[in-house]
Length: 337
Image (cartoon, rainbow, N blue to C red; front, side, top):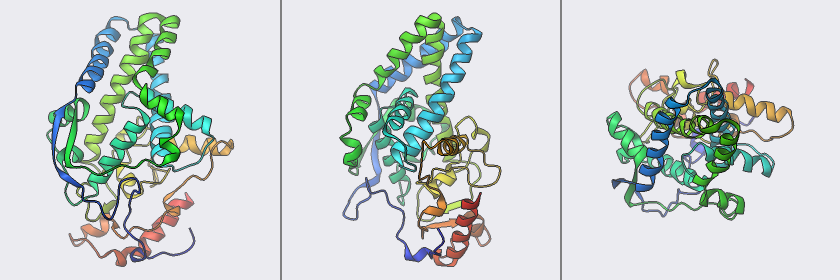
């Protein structure tokens, strides 16, 4: 992006699936309730993932756990589900999108549409001036753990999420959504044939359990404490970077960066911010399999986004227009790395 854009020439960031000027949705009033389907699914994975895996440990089963976790978290959750399916931050062949989204479903959190709705609802709520603590993760850790893994929320005035027809009418994605839990079954049968129950417990149950637990844990940290370079003015919830988890999450733990530039395929923006997902995307780009990788330099300046250290000098939010040139300059620095 070579044209200098001042922040006040651009509207605030909006997600067209859920943000509508005429909308009367409210992210604050609502009730959290136990979700029987989550209790059964998550409870079963935790039970078999702990007891079953403890009784059947082997070096081969542990290696399977490590390899399958790396594949599903990197190619699946990070690149397939998050950076491609939800944010469309790069382009790839349709077969690759299907494969990566399938790997993302294998993480065990939800189907593709379920993941998109959960993500967009949380993102929308956090950008409001106030939101329910279910979305902000600022409850005490054990309540947040229970809420996020075993419960759902009913807002009194929820927004409507309109998924674009290109995604919503895709039969492969529809199939993966309808049978998302059952997609573990073919892999479980394969693992059983190759390594018995040990491979099933470690390659399915333990992998899914650790992935779900890690997803909650990083989400809790990333909305409560840590380092941040950016402040989203007017948002009820700010994102924080969680450096120690960068490699384990394939770069997803640079959450303050993601709050600042949601559509960027690159999450590790500063020197030393390791982003394995971005490394894989660059390798795939070099191989000619992906194109049009979006970085912050490709995105319009956000009037509500300011550098955090510029806030701390006076303790007050600086007018967005005063920071426009500094913000654009930083975008160019990101693009050059």
